Image (cartoon, rainbow, N blue to C red; front, side, top):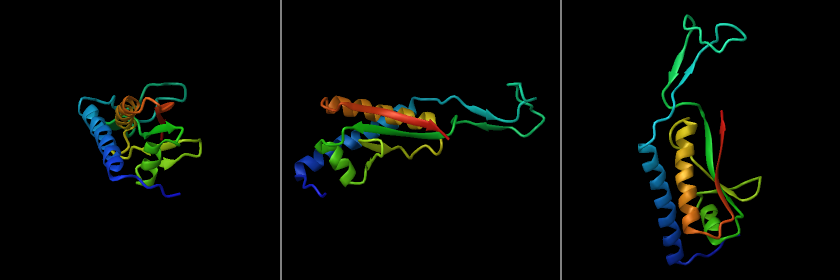
Length: 137
């Protein structure tokens, strides 16, 4: 269903989204993820890495995904996000904004999503749920 948004409403929502996104980038400039070392353990029951086997240093930490979840999705801002392609309908109800920057760094994506969620909650107190959802890859 296509909803008509006034130019003023469209501009306001666009500014809010752009500001939230900028806050996510700014939060990442101040953040240092915990690096990850990937390798084989010395034996099945050990958590010590066997450095005689190939090991890899991943500076940006664990790999994964993060999104901003907004529920319910029946307010005009949520509908605008979907209609403009900035968010997608979720199978779990509501909508989600996929954080696709930062290569595979789950921690960086979470920091970005958290900054956006906090800003959205401040701008739209009527949002019942606006939070970060993430998972490791």
